[in-house]
Length: 476
Ligand SMILES: [Zn+2]
Image 1: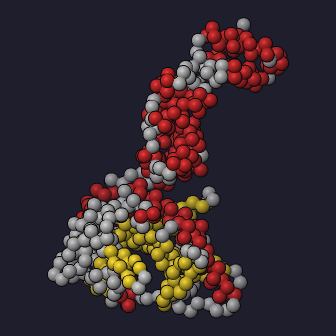
Image 2 (image 1 turned 90 degrees about the horizontal axis):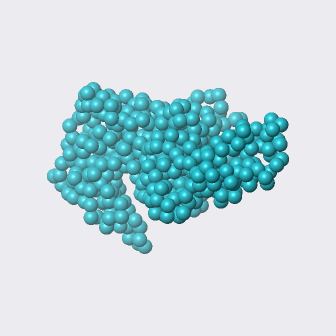
Image 3 (image 1 turned 120 degrees about the horizontal axis):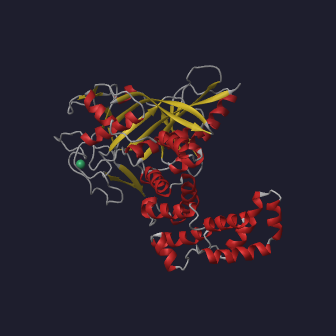
């Protein structure tokens, strides 16, 4: 029997607001002392009233629009009831049957093949606090309680762990480009739940699934799904096909999933409309004004880089890793007038250094203007690539402009006609064969002469000038 995996993802992403979902506490509590970003509202004291954060709603709608969702005019918040010590209200304020958005889709590409993944809905909710377990005690930090979240639920359209990872990465990029979430996995701003089941290829029945909870990295997402597919395949081949949904956890160290509980259903949560918050009415004008603020999305940008700037699909993918990197590349390409060379310098020289120094494009010293000028000088032949490679490390270390580095390092280009002629004569004497080959019609043979001149000048001769004078000499 040939089996296929049916995978759906729920992605929770922290919305990039200044304050929490229903109170004015600081939403950026990363690294703050425990329980230092709390108030009576987010700790559920008696008599308090939640007030929805308008910015969180706007950013949620923008994200939904970027995921091609429909925004119904009417939506509302609901209470999802359950007890847990990190949830002081005894319920979570979420959205059940009338979320802010439905019916979206996102396009992913895996090994050059494009595929559309359906988005069931994107809804808003607030986060719980955080428990940590020390010896026999459990400690509760409510800094995260009340943080605005969006939950993005996909259709079960994913067929492999690799696809699920690519999809999650694409969602992360979209949220970052739109500015709805920083989606920083390291800070826990994005988490995944993955539902996995198997079925016989050719059938369309959905079998009971295992939901893997709280995966917090792309690697964990991929490994956990792979493991779960393998585990279920063994059950199928032993004829023990799962007959009910289950909730499982991921043990990173052991590299395996473990059973947490039988999956709860919506009825277990006894959802009902949140009585303290009026229903939402999102007018068309409000939605359309947010749509008009959407930036160019990662996929569109990648395709434009390939079509307009003539760089490869792989390079375009790497250069749209973040919005800031994409902006930086575009600026460098514009200033240098040479997109391919700009891409090459950024991808081979700059990114390697960023990686090594573990910093981001915003934290390094080379401005787009300075790199653009360097690439321009190289591509117009004003300086050689070799000198460029000497200038670059200095630029990285000091952030200085090209001219200044050329001056201070004595890398002055040799453009003087007389001096280059002397070098040319010497090179021609050394390579009589090259000239003979050229005269026999081998145009390429001249490369040896130019190379010799560059060597003799220690890379400082102006290559454009060398070519020009050589052609002139041969035409005589
Ligand atoms: Zn608060």
